[in-house]
Length: 437
Image 1: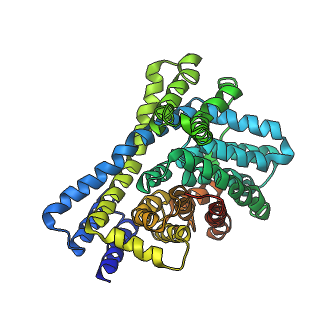
Image 2: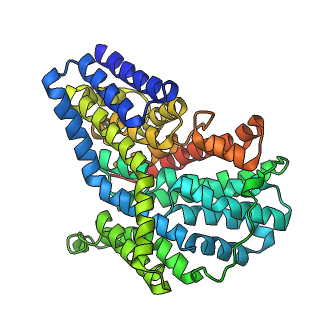
Image 3: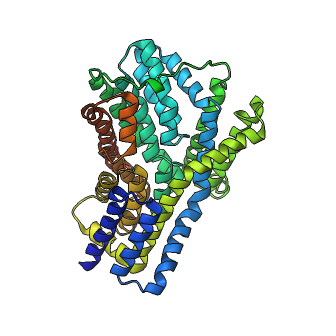
């Protein structure tokens, strides 16, 4: 009983430090890990080693993949490939199907781009279409932002999903394939279908975001943009599917199907197709990479801190105990994982923090319950997107960019994120009926 109380006190301290004290997440995680270790009776001389091991183990398998994902996404954005993808999709669907085009755009652009980058990059496009079509900004924006959000929460190589894959010992390629199966129907519901109920909401976009359209001539070609942006997904999913259908190829393809190699190859191709091959110098391409690595540093620190807390729970033995107790509850393990992530999301606001913090709790649950770890990544990812409200930076970005009242922001943004979380879980549970470990 005391062990459970100690875990709750440590998580409560973490919540208090981040949400109320505005303490930098890495420091908050380390302080929470220290408190948990002392409360759980870990010998003081072993506590620093546990924290260092947790940080090293989790970051060691992730840092290169996440950094490559960041520089890859930055190149997609800086080269204009993301804008070309958006323009191509909208041009092909026509005015009558703009919401569908916005949905696909958000998802495709969200695969290589991190959420905040995609948000800032795509908002001027939304406002441009508002001027051209006369449609409400919120009804046009929600489908695109739903696509960005789902890609961010569910799919590798985004940081939270990548950290969860490592924490529960899932397979990144399989998680990506399952994630696509879950993401597409969830996106349809939370995107264009939900947006139909938002036509009456009339926001007034801030004047500073009403930018003029940029000419299309400097942008890369449509095929180049799509092929390069989707290359990591195609390689990772394709190689995983190939080894699933032909198990004899698993060992020969092991090197090429490794996520690190996939991201490295994809970035190398992008450097040529979107950089050097279009007349840019290597120095200018690398300048974007340096900016991306500065932007990704805070996320890496969050993951590092979550690793410290996870290792303390493992070394104290409470992690296995908690997993056994959760597994004994008359509730599906996937629903438990989703619930843990949802609770942390409501308390802390950040989807990334919610996902990587929940990983330390659900890791032993996967072991003790025998549920599919790839599905657990998706269930936790769905929970980490639930109930966005005033402690989430995305909530305020959406409110201010679209010039909405708090009521309309809850009605549109918060409800969209909740639909993503709820239907994401439902489709994960449905998929679990057909998936066996």
